[in-house]
Image (cartoon, helix red, strand yellow):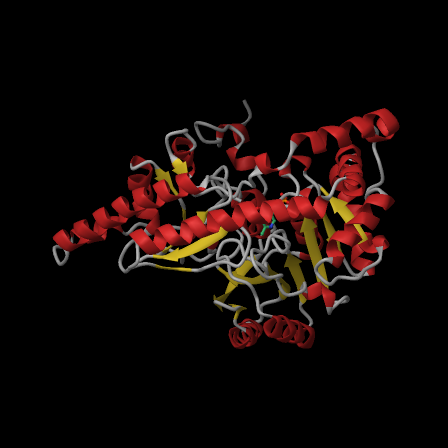
Length: 437
Ligand SMILES: Cc1ncc(COP(=O)(O)O)c(C=O)c1O
């Protein structure tokens, strides 16, 4: 064994060989708990898994059959690094539902939108750069930004999304301290994790601020078509072509197993994205592209999205009704679409410290600290209503009530004794626990 290898730790002899960038890829402290939480007796309100059982299997099987019979050799072969032209045309039809008009030449097919986040980060982020994001923000995007050694600066939100005035202040403060702001990352519609939607007026204002300050907007929109009662505001990309990279995905409107997403980018950026895509994966899966393309041309995919909407609307209602019934002392967001409710606990409850007790009571959630780069979020939890049935959701919230009530009783008993300090630990987001997306 070499001297350098000997400098490793007990578990990993290569410990000191990793790049600096890899230091950002640490397992979450709550990972072990989530392994327990995936047992069937636990009601998990933690994961963001789409309810794929609402997709009739025969629709997918038919599309797969036809692809293999009619275009098998193409489906099983490498393809173009940008994606199949016809499929990119069809992606334009999907984006048109949110007001976007574009050219298929500016679309790059990626391995889920997660991979598009990775490619954009690779193209734009140097160590020490700043990515402005909502506070809280999507955990696995932040893991990527950090793996490129960029820092996330959180701009606060209210029920109408990111606050433009706060954005202006943050930009001025960051600039005054000599920081380079590379991206403004936003999930404007049915945000993960907060469930809130950026109003139309604010979309325009935030685009204006970004334009004035020469900041590229990265609009990540996996949930926009999953509205409950009323269509969401059009995408930011619908009114701004040059300053926005838009990310879309089939993970929530069809199924994540295909791993199919896309980026729509200004022309010059698109060229670089294709090169980065080729370097990373050679070409996105031909098989997945053709199957989805077949599905989009033959099946009533808009009706299928309506079905998903109905399922999630019912589950969201079950969740907010149960919260209202069992935990009226808490506050929470009431999303108009998507997968998530963001709950604020009463002071001084700590969502991370409380999690082991919740898992013991057979309910799991994601602590708010996972969604902040700066250790905030102790008073918050993210609850997902996408996967469990309405009955399981009610049961989960009842169990959560026992946990929260128990914590409050404990705090009351020990208030003023100093014993409460025990529940305050240190927290920083690392990588998400399994099942959290
Ligand atoms: C905000 C956001 N962006 C991106 C993704 C990644 O989605 P996919 O890679 O499956 O397209 C997710 C998944 O949950 C998400 O919530």
